[in-house]
Length: 356
Image (cartoon, rainbow, N blue to C red; front, side, top):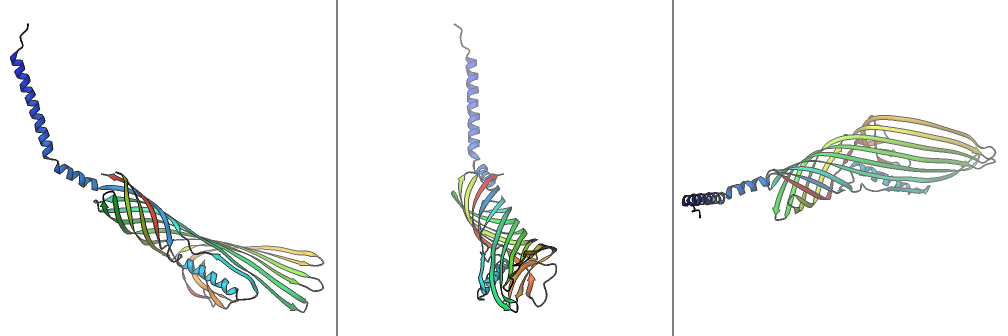
């Protein structure tokens, strides 16, 4: 039998003891320095950035400024017409500027767990439309016999306003477990655009009754389109509550407010006016038929003004693009229009976190 070498065992024992000593030293070194890396890691985790996607509904505070003044003026005009017995019907169907959807994306740079700076943009679009008009009937007696006059006119009108903001915000967070209460405020630059379509249809008929009955009919159609632009600074703020869905995402709900007032709009005006006149008598039927058309265009500021109504002997508000300021006895309180998008609203948000 071969005898084992005792020196070989001694060498193996020495190597084993050395390895155990080295492992023990490494373990003790790892246990001795946990405080500093964890603190640094916690501090690093507070920094980073997040993407916030939000969508909600904004409710306008005063109907859009001069846009609401125009709507109220049209409603008052047709209400006053109802006091005249000749107007068999006078109506308005135009509601106050409604709520509008609001969409935004913000990139938040987190300075620490409580403060962040946000840069974002969004899209806002709102539409206000209505129709109004009247039916009027009159009759009389002339040397050639009795006659009647009928005038039926209807108007249609629609405004669309869009705005794209570039916003800068300061966020303050108050985290507590899975929940996070936050507030933000800031300012932005809004790129605004307004489009306006307006038109009316009128049928004016004079019927006379004598030896030969006669009719004279005039139909008119008017189509107007306007487009104006204006940029403005505005302010915003909000208060919200988030709950973490996972380590890198949170779902929230917030209440927000916005103040932005556009004044000094500049735009263009295009109009196409068409008139058709027909004549009829009992012996010849429709013997005359002629149509004329006129086109008009100009550019300039968007004006709000009050225009005189000879039927009611009062002034009523209007809103149109004119190349020059409306002047004369038929106009008063003329100024450049102011249209705002001041609103408060409620939104739902999704935030995704990215740590450095």
